[in-house]
Length: 303
Image (cartoon, rainbow, N blue to C red; front, side, top):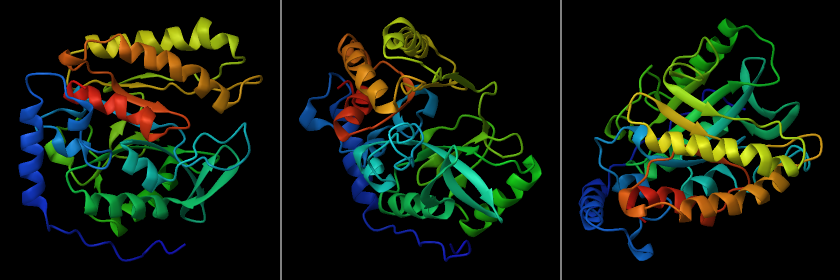
């Protein structure tokens, strides 16, 4: 893995045309629920959102354990690659980093996921270069690693230096216009810069240790729906709600949990007044598909 690879250049061709299209798209949807045909595609939906929108006041679909495609049914949480997730509309990534000799290898627990942090950054940067109105929220978590916080930060800083301009790492919730074309860091390590994971600016529901399928109805879904309700009721632009629909346990594999949660989430979305553009916050899921992501980002347009 070459950590010092050349940073991809940013293209500006077509930005003016995109700005005109996205402005028109937003105005067309301002007074009524969007029709399915009017919704932007998964690759460009944030480009149709006003720049003065706080990230906390949007519904942002994403993925839990974004890169976990390997390790068998108890470990795998996704089937789509990062480029495919981005194209489908995912804008939150959950990236688990193991420090190995000064490089971050991506893990789910002890299972290496055949990708390194530099690969993740190149894929995100390539997408953002081609879609400069978009942004990616990225949880950066130390996983299966015992190095000190200082050592973890030192490795992360090397990535920052070699991908200059890619990261946005301030301790506040930004407006979209501030972070278009960038990766917003959600710092799940005490030393990292960015929005502190689990800190005062985040409200997180992630009860993931669900033992059996029966606890989906009795525990996981009630917690999830209550947190989505709380996100809808919230008004503070400096509070980011993050609601994980994912879980697994001694008698429950991630895919079984995802299949049990999917119809419940669909029913919840169907019960909402879409014309009011309800804000559900950031919603990471397992085994995402374009069909699962689209109804969530559509809420931003009354769809």
